[in-house]
Length: 136
Length: 128
Image (cartoon, rainbow over all chains, first blue to last red):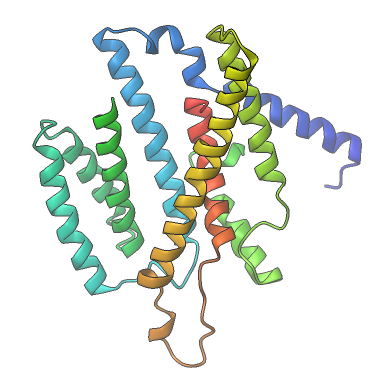
């Protein structure tokens, strides 16, 4: 369906205002997030974990879009699998297996792809969660 | 942008694939998406400054500069460079294929585009 410029402008403004409406979940949750209770800590950590998980998931999808990369490469997979194993064990020590569970969850998500990019981004997700938990 | 926030963000990358087929490059043609993100970052940074009752304008400007230049641009440049290097050096299998196959590589701009795409939900959730 062909639309004229005015209709397109209206659609564009509606799109932007819809996005602005959902913008900054953390901003609207500031009274909760700035608290010192366990609920506040849990909410803030969950928000960061979801945001960074989503970031790395979309990045992973972007690199999977290129057809030549992300095919099976056994040496690379084995190298990163061993690193993943070591990392998940290392992360799980100070944090009572919380991050290891996240890592396993992402690994289970990446099984149908069985591509090296998935494994790589499992590492990056693990690193980001680890850094996030360290900072918080 | 709404597609990136939906449950099927991979639809965005179909456009990149079609662009590759028609224009022979993966990255976006125009920097409009980046400008839109910069404007949103400016607005949200000023809103944060007002919400936290920052007294001086220079502090707000500093926060705007930090969120735009470090959180968005700096992090994006680092992620795009690391992604390009890793994917071209370790993940590319074109050299192992037949000689008829055209060698593909990940463009740095495409990697930065991927960062821009991925930054949208991060921004919506955290309003960096």
